[in-house]
Length: 387
Image 1 (spheres, rainbow, N blue to C red):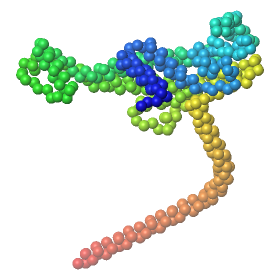
Image 2: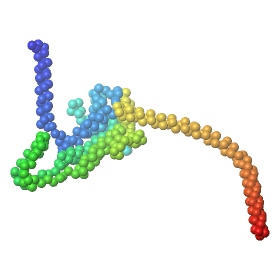
Image 3: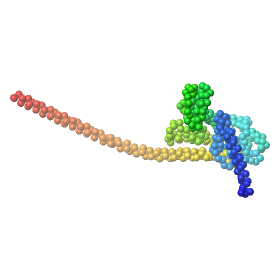
């Protein structure tokens, strides 16, 4: 028998199960992802990527009235945020930039309207407020995200359609209702795992099939998968994350895997620089101690590249130092080679004269052999005459 204390827990479990059932019912009614709804799909991709980039920077020294995630959301989505003092507290606003442009045609006024704070005021930039830029052109990340999300939405829709088309192996055409019902029963039996039996020839004569599936459909699907990898990797590379896409269909070597390092950080470095400049201005204007630095994978990647760069520099310095003594040693060797060259000249003359003497001796021996041969021939001839 259950105790009274366990009844609330049981009611909570029942409520949880009811909630889960309601959610499962919702999933059953809306179980298919709508690939054709490109607008919602683009928004979802962008929001998921903004959720990832929330971890790009870490702020320290921010007041409680400025949540870090709201500040980054203003900067990344809108391209800028204004830091203003209201009722003695600092707030981050996303107002309108305007006023009379300065000498470089930059805005001088930040107009803010906030119903919660009952605020409707114009702040002079540099005197009453500080504008933090996400980048030098106030762009933010929204245009970049929209570009890649739009391409990915189109590509995923094409992949979905190509996947559906791979199910169509052939089209079946029936000449009458009887043949249609027999063909449908034959297909249903195959789906259930039963062997179908064809009873008469009229069924075969009235039934026609048109093959639709070809190897080209499979190639299209493979190309779309490669394009998906390429778009995602390019998107991550724009954000300073190394995501290599392998279009070679084979393993990558170490040089190919690190080839993207040079293009990863320029945008991230620019975003960090603008935030650090704004921190200096805020601290000078409002007497705060706010700082910002890279965070998460961006910090690790930056540290790894700095270590690789320092190791390369350290490796190149000893090689340069070793090359200098080698050059100095080569000079005495050159000097020593000069006497050797001078000594080699008499040796060359002696060897040439010796060779000439040997050739002369060989010639004399050949002459002696020829004379002996002629004498033998004469003796033979005289002996033959006497006989």
